[in-house]
Amino acid sequence: MKSNYLQVFISAEDKEKADRILDSLLNKRLISGGLITNGPSRFWWKGKITESNYYNISSFTTEKHKQAIIEDVKRNSAEEVPMVWFVNIDGNIEFLNWVDENIY
Image 1: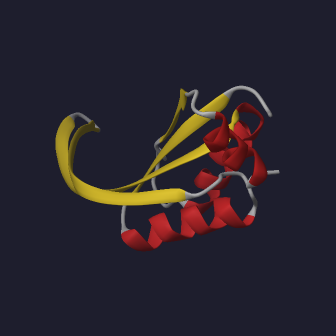
Image 2 (image 1 turned 90 degrees about the horizontal axis):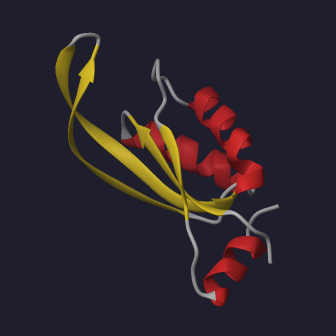
Image 3 (image 1 turned 135 degrees about the vertical axis):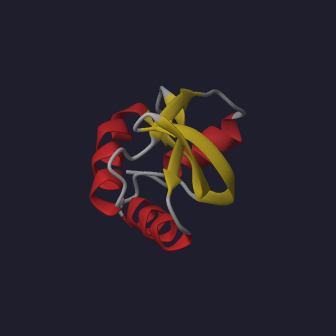
């Protein structure tokens, strides 16, 4: 069993980009899987509040893939500032083994 498990959150500007990002990360075995959700979002951008419908990917990985995930998202996102963030997690052994078995 590896250490330093992470939940990965990635935002995408539309469904096509979310699918492209998720497929790329899966094909490279950097993440164990992904859930795409979407909904309205409001945020500060260039001095004003902007509203958009965003897609969000939630997945799981380990610390060793963090930089590779960031770089891959940057290559596959059209956003000026791609949103990628990580949260340390722990879980039951079966879940953590599943993460390990599905990433390289």
